[in-house]
Image (cartoon, rainbow, N blue to C red; front, side, top):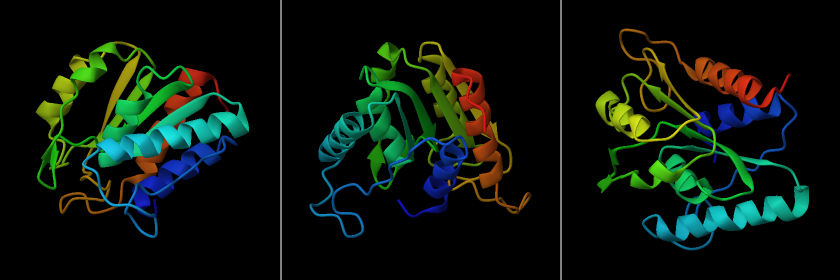
Length: 180
């Protein structure tokens, strides 16, 4: 919830006046519970979506980073209250876990995938295969010179978080005709 990627994504949404909800999965930070290998974390997302829907009565966009993008996609795909999905730094293999995305073949909501071209957890070949298996509407954006956390690489040392925000903003504007 407090890492730079999540914060900058929230700022992109906020720049359009969209309400945002950031939360920690169970067992992270001061939240209760313990890590549940993605199963309980899916329930965390479901509860958050229900809370948003009950209180705001607005279309919902789900954005997640790394493990959060995997869980957000799992829950958001097919949920009629979710009108779009953003996956930042979608992982293939991280922290001893392998991620598979066969469920995306039935995901018809608009999807934006943003990854760094030097992301060791989501290599280009894996991301392109996931993207190819996903139905339209969809967009895949590579941030040149960025690693998993959208920081720079030795060859391109400046942070790339601003570029990530610009791509989110561009997609929101083009997909939903939103203006700042």
